[in-house]
Image 1 (cartoon, rainbow, N blue to C red):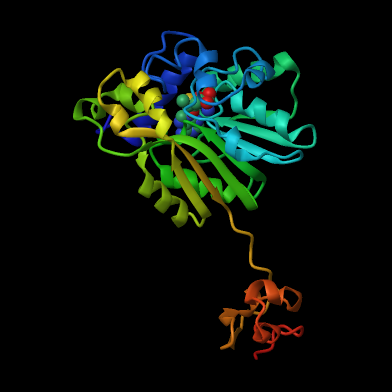
Image 2 (tube, rainbow, N blue to C red):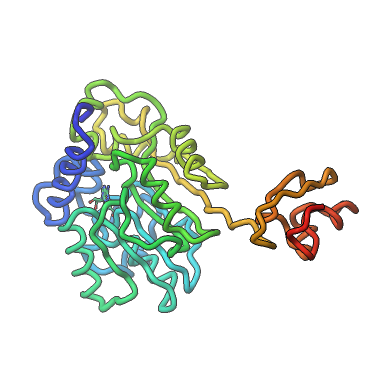
Length: 318
Ligand SMILES: C[S@@+](CC[C@H](N)C(=O)[O-])C[C@H]1O[C@@H](n2cnc3c(N)ncnc32)[C@H](O)[C@@H]1O
């Protein structure tokens, strides 16, 4: 897999997960032939999903392909707009639809036509109309700019050849203040050479995992803030189960990945001149300086805060 081009990797991933969706022999999928390819209920409850979660989704939605539970950190609220990257059979998308209710909405994106077909059929089974499954690549999301509040994903980004582009796309489609709630595989060491060279280890969510520091760097470079990558120590058993004693469990773990898209600074003027206040605000663009009513929030409670930054008559230099 190391010598494959990104397009070859995508084609292989699509082929493997197409077979998973159509229940043909499931070799090399995320889960390595054990959890994802066997009975699904027990593997998902091991990841933290409840029996009520399993009962709430259409039959066939939970393929047991996850590596954690992004619902646990998403904190979804009624009315929110959710995007699920790599939605598979729709398991997390259906759970999210329940959380956001009839005033919210959920989009699931997956690049494998058979998965999209399966997820749509599952939605039809239960008459769910607030979930929209779209065929597309998470490196080029078929989603409008600033149009969703929460992006979830479960064991998918490790499969994408260009993870920086995935995070840039995520930033683009999130509304200001929106957040990431992702479960994925991350590298915590070096894979044994034999595992790294095995194509099934890439499609099986092991060899494509990026190091934690690299994920933090890519998120920061995409302008996310409040970045947090939490490695799940208890996932060792899961990886051991997938990788059959190959030593991969010392090199790859499941992690929860959180980050937020910042709110824009409150503009008080379209003026782009600069102001300077030695007291507290430093030199800032007038277009991004604080309006008078937000002074204490942006400059603190010091006596100087009353006078720093922009005046009501913004646009004038101080
Ligand atoms: C391991 S499965 C996880 C499915 C689902 N999230 C779950 O937990 O059941 C990975 C899914 O991501 C999809 N996928 C992989 N790479 C993708 C990409 N670059 N763009 C969109 N979908 C992708 C696959 O088709 C597959 O359905």
